[in-house]
View: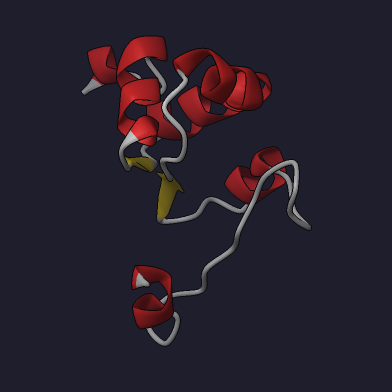
Length: 88
């Protein structure tokens, strides 16, 4: 997997409700990139899992952070403006 290839070059944190660190706390560390992976094909379920963190993600991006959405992560960014696209 790509995460294994990047481990030696970057500090990688897995964040989320099922991880040791929350997305909010991870974003407070001002990472270089926030990556929202894919998984599943149901937008409503994916959004329900992420919506409590949406404002933290929007603020992170608005303040210069980078968002990479993979598969469903890209759909979420576009559908719910997680990438704060109107700001650039």
